[in-house]
Amino acid sequence: TALHFVGQGDAMADWTFVESGGKTKVTWGFDGDAHGSMVARWFNLAMEPMMGPQFESGLADMKKVVEAGPKVDIRGLEASLSDDAAVTVAYVELSSAKDNESVKNALGPAFGQVMGALAGGQVEAAGMPIVVTTSEEGEQFAMWAAIPVVAEPAAPLADAAVRFGTVGGGKAARTTHKGAYSGLGDTHAKLQAWMGIHQAKGSGAPWEQFVNETGNTPEAELLTEIHYPVE
Image (tube, rainbow, N blue to C red; front, side, top):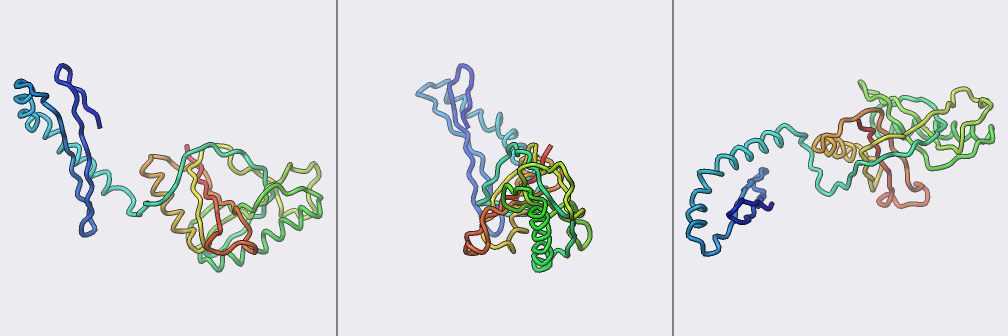
């Protein structure tokens, strides 16, 4: 960080982070050049009593913020805040236990139900499947199994359980999970931690969209976009 002292020139402050024993030692340093000036040299001697307390206070504040934050390692996470386009979807509501196998067994038939209703109503699908988690209370997930569509039809579908709605359409925290669906929970936790660090407050149901098809893609190469609407 560049520091400018009026009439005294510029200096640099730097940060050093060293991990040891599960902790991180943070050093806030300061470096300036007297440029041969005797006055500047005397001024530099006064830096410790002048700036030391401010540096110590800043480090103490950092410690409080870090220790109060989520205890999740987010290194390697690539996340961003961006505007999600609104997507019209056809969906059915469902619930499932939170273990991976139960979620998989519940979503499969639900997506099949939506696709069957769209085909019967001659409604054109417009993208990969979406899962919206509307509630995580207790031991159950409440979800939408949704398929993007070109447009909502004028006439209702024969299957009244298949409804139409909108996903997205606002600011969101986003990341892409790569790998088996069983690891999605860990990526959700990392994105939630990232949101906390960036003071991005959630506002609405999070949702996932599959990027590639399981039947044609090795498990390690599966991609799933994760979106958290934010204020």
